[in-house]
Amino acid sequence: MKEKIVQLAQELIRHPSISPNDEGCQKLIAERLIKLGFEIEWLPFNDTLNLWAKHGTGEPVIAFAGHTDVVPVGDENQWTYPPFSAEIVGDTLYGRGAADMKGSLAAMLIAAENYVKGNPQHQGTIALLITSDEEAAAKDGTVRVVDTLMKREEKITYCMVGEPSSSKILGDVVKNGRRGSITGNLYVQGIQGHVAYPHLADNPIHKALPFLQELTTYQWDNGNEFFPPTSLQIANIQAGTGSNNVIPGELYVQFNLRYCTEITDELIKQKFVEMLEKHGLNYRIEWNLSGKPFLTKPGKLVNALVDSIQEITGITPKLETGGGTSDGRFIVLMGAEVVEFGPLNATIHKVNESVSCDDLAKCGEIYYQMIVNLLDKDK
Image (cartoon, rainbow, N blue to C red; front, side):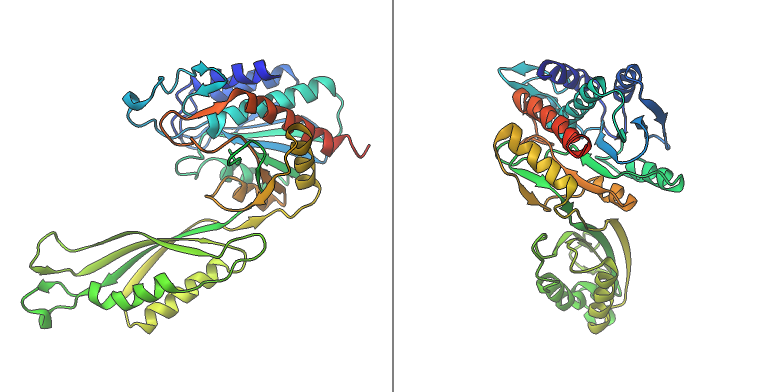
């Protein structure tokens, strides 16, 4: 299994699929699946290519979800090896996407291949949901596929997202949920004027300072056993013309909240209005909800994955919900149980991104055993 996974990961990395471009990665995957009798459906939206592939019929539907797109490489001169050369040095595979997440894609695909070859008449459905729009806008990828499937009343019972979840050693962390993410763009209005005549102007920075102080010190919640407390961070702030003698007419503040299940996006918006009105600000605010929080509590899927990790690595993983968002936030809308597991995330989005070849092999074994645990152990 190791040789097949590593070879496929190398092939995928050598396609420079900077988001939202796929550059032939999904065609490579589809060709392999067709040989195994998978039903292939292409779901392109705008500049994004999506693949929905299925083998078998009925429930449970076990889906492996991932993305072929990668983030830009930055200054290639800083890379020890060309970012799309997929060099192997010792046990380490280097390249953009090695850990996030072409290595996981290769492991998931080979695991599915091996299971279908050995169990051509398996119960239920094994599926792959692959997109080229996860790292950038995430507007025409998994979210559009999920919408299409839901309109057709198709279901996903269990979903494994192959994001690199491991922290220090393979298998130490499984993501069984994610915090919600909401961004606000706030515009506080004032009156522009000369700094020498402040009585003829209205400085929006001065007026907003008490509000910003309250905003950045407000305790939204205390979290719970699955999530840390909600966190707010100001990401950008801007005002003024660049001149030292002009009072600005408008203040722009951009902030993001990573929030847990103790609060909702509607309550967040409501609290913002209360604060803004309390401080008497003339404002307008625009909201962008990237995703609501979700949680898959210990049950059949979590147990199947944890048992697999224990069997292959000897490690009992910790269930966590921290970090950024993932496409799991869309798939959970189908009523699916969703978990994320993959190799170490220490080098993702960095120069010299890399992954252990041995870890990729173990990922494949874990994914395979998870399928066995879900489909075969209750026979």
